[in-house]
Amino acid sequence: MKLEARFGSTYYVRLDTPVTLDEKSALGKLVPEDVSDSLLAGDPITARLTRAPGNDAPIGGLKVVTSGGWFAARHPAPKIFTSSMLKA
Image (cartoon, rainbow, N blue to C red; front, side):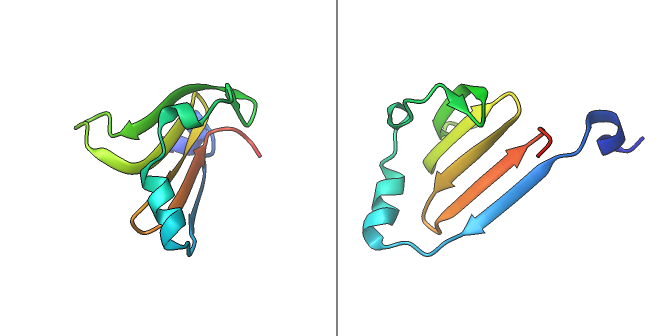
């Protein structure tokens, strides 16, 4: 059985963007408290992470999670990832 047929479509975007050294440094210093909003795209935020849940390694940025998706902004190669199970 196809996963999309069973669970629905997913959406994913990755942006590799050039940033200054100061911006790169700022990404590495993000902490969960830097995100004061309680919603992301209308969904309640369930986690704000700066360390990987599996091995507690620093991710070099911040990941914000909801039940329907997530985004992460991290360094050293500046990347912004997003993933969602919600329809656009």
